[in-house]
Image (tube, rainbow, N blue to C red; front, top):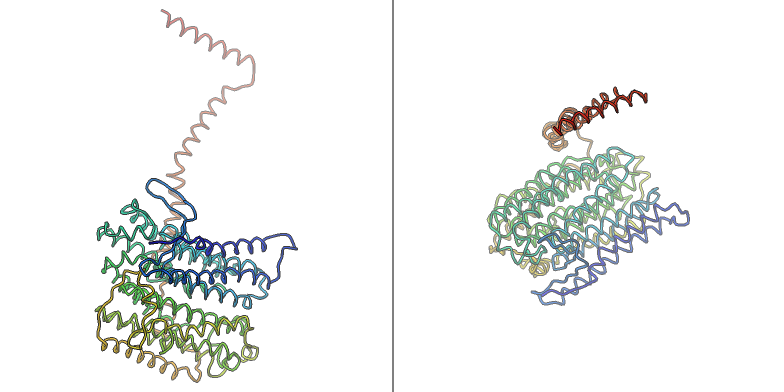
Length: 637
């Protein structure tokens, strides 16, 4: 049973309307229409806060329905109808989308509030908030779309907004190139999404192309078709959620303002691929082999990006690679058909990663936009609120019990063991230790020891209240969010997993308590080993290292960007040059040029006959009439 709720259409409409109003006011040439920064900030915050309130209403409405009927929908209008393809612009909420809706709108609201302080004094303050509202509106369309086509509108929308926000400081060419890179790499993945939708429609679309119809008719598909569709959709997910081989855009996305990094990396764009796989769990659960491909891609991405994170010197890039690594954990979860575990890690990650990015923004703000951790040190006395809140976020990211990240990460690792995948579990435990190491390497270098740049240290100061209050709220979430899905071994009832169950085609493997205790123990040991090594190396300060050998190779991210440039970009440019200088002028333009030459030659011939004298034209007429008479007389004989 499915209930209708027209207010679903308002949820994405509010931030889209906010983006339109703020954008028009910013672009207006009327001086009386120009608003103060405070007014722009208040206008920008209205939409995300209202959408969060609507998200609570969605959750409560669903909670009031029977478990088997927890679905509400709204069809705004028929978008287009071509043959059997009938697509409505509709919105759909179930337990999965309602959970996504709650933490997306909550974190977005805090990031909007934080941005008022961080972006103060920026000459294009209004444009920034217009883009931020537009980004949120597109993400909500992605989450609430009632089918893959409507989801794809939001999918492409957040891709566009990420380009606008990453290259926001467009006076610097490097930022524009970073935005271009994000846009192009995502388009490669999006091709997979489009092809996956096309094959899905070809196989089953005539029976309905919304999630409910697709789920009801999934049994009509052959395993080969399902595998092909799932692989193509996963290609789209690797682009949006930065997995091997399309992860290279995400670290460069740090070119945008820090609130943008928090919004993209915490609970919105980069988690879209995980959400998409979970949304299509009714297909992925039918092809375990494809699920293993997803899981192994995720865990190898987690490993590679953790290696990168251990050697970075930019505070935002350390967090960027940690995002790629945590996304790998999420894909390992959904790939093993532990969809609720993967989504729960998305949920907890939203709190601690938004906290860490906003905390990094507070540090950068205090140090006049310095981002090199080797120029920091001793800041815990200067930035006490930032320090303690970031410490909570770091403990959650590193998987320290009882912080939220421990419970969500541990559940994925436990289920890897329970489903008979010890290789994935072992790599996951190794990555957990590496995460603790590079996270606290950052914390120790930034906040402990002695100042490495006395001038920066002397001028450092705590951020204004509008920036620190969101940090405190997110710190509470990073500390306590894990209790919402406590496993039975800790006396919990796994509330989040039970809430998500109606939306997910999840497997429930049976495993002994000994297996669960082994998984928990290994995670805790890995955390303590990682943080101990970090403390011994950096707890009292350290000198700027000179990387050689493997460390230098990892610092330069295994030269993957250079490899892609050599194998893909340069050949592509060479093909483009060949087309430009040979194929187009000789092949494409050849017939056109030949036709032009023919008409010019004919014109030249006829030009010889045009002398401009009436008597000559009279002779032409006499000759013409004579020839006509001759021909006529011959035809009458």
